[in-house]
Image 1 (cartoon, rainbow, N blue to C red):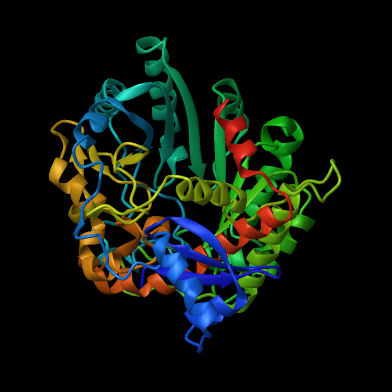
Image 2: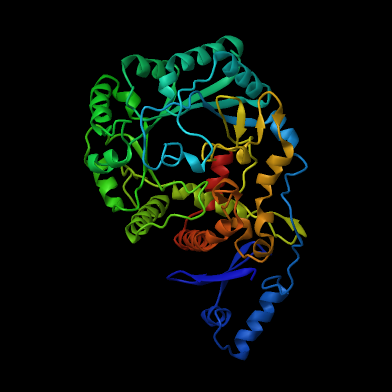
Amino acid sequence: MLWIVFKTHKNFYLYDRSKNKICEIKEATYNYLNGFDGSNTVKREIRKLRSAGYLRENNPLEVISNPYNDIVEHMLNNCMEDLILQVTQSCNLRCEYCIYSENNASRHGRQHRDAVMSYDKAVQIINFFMEHSRNKVIIGFYGGEPLLAFDLIKKIVQYIHSTFPERKVEYSITTNGTLLNNEIIEFFIREKFQMTLSIDGPKEIHDKNRHFQSGRGSFDVIVQKLTKLEQTFPKFFENVTTNTVINPEYNVNNYIDFFNDNVSLKNMHHRLSGLSDAGIDDIYVYNEDLKIAMAKEEIYAMANMLGWFAKDFELKEYFPPYMSDLIQKHAILESGEFISKSGHPGGPCIPGVKRCLVNIDGDIFPCEKAIENQEMVIGNTEQGFYLEKVKQFMNIGTLTENECKNCWAFLLCSSCGVSCTGSDGFCAKKRLKKCGGIQQYVIKILRSIKILEENGYDFYRFEKNVEE
């Protein structure tokens, strides 16, 4: 089916994939399209819709093929944006859910080990990245625990300063926080680092998941360090983001209350995310409380967009920003009809362009969410990109070709290659398992767009301001 109907409190709507538009319809038409009997008047409305190009009975799409296939090589050679540099595979924690901890590593090809990227390899990777990228780039440091290789990080930054002084480089780092000290924070401030800190909520939850090799929890160590460091460097910590992995066993409000109540963490930005299911054959299912918390935040975001809060209202976003997703999906709806014989579902990025992870050996992966085994390698900084492997990720829709061809959410899909990897590589069954949830989310997005427009929100003005 190439269309879907939905409603708000005010109106009834049809989204049609071929037209790539949302069309307001009458309640009787809505009911008819949902399978109820319709009067002659309704049937006349259906004929009008069909004559306008809606509700096509034939599907023009014949081939699943990414439209960027012909230019991907040029983009890989010239347009890289974000390098995530794995400076070490060593970690001083053994998180229960980490795919590289000993109890999970057999499924994913490697485990934590005392291996640090050599300086020569780091230089070679940086040179490769700079040769293949635009003027403004982002370089992130990743592990393992990257601060175990802090001396190497300093040398890399110094090398970039001396070798590429004309380039605009932003730095970021993801850390568990156990090794932070004054010297490190002063370096971050000097080099304008954006820091993401991994902390999993209250002590009893955090320590169950994030502990040292000995089994001792890491919560007290992190909070003690943060309390002292925030007093010394208050401005820096206003721009720190915490990343929290939600354990399905716990109510999400335990996490939100913790961040609201903790003095040392209150002024930071917080992000909650689910467990990664990359590399396993199943998907995680969360409790209803998570859906309720996300819905509440989404309502606040929409009210904020409409200007319903006071000017000094600060919207706290714990989940991926809903507003940016609304803007992105609205832009897709403005991209015109989709009646091509060839196309690809939305979702996949161009691996290696927007971002990529490079491990200590120079192997290139699509992003930090990809499991580190040979199935996921899309290149090496000595040999270059493996073009056919990159295209395999870009064209992941061929894995479920028949289902994708006939899906109404084709253009608005968010399923990528990394998200549908199982224990043996790309998994069609897993990709299809996610379809229902993705379609429900897209309907929610479409409904939210219309609710905003019904209440006077001007997407066009916002998009014009962004362009300017």
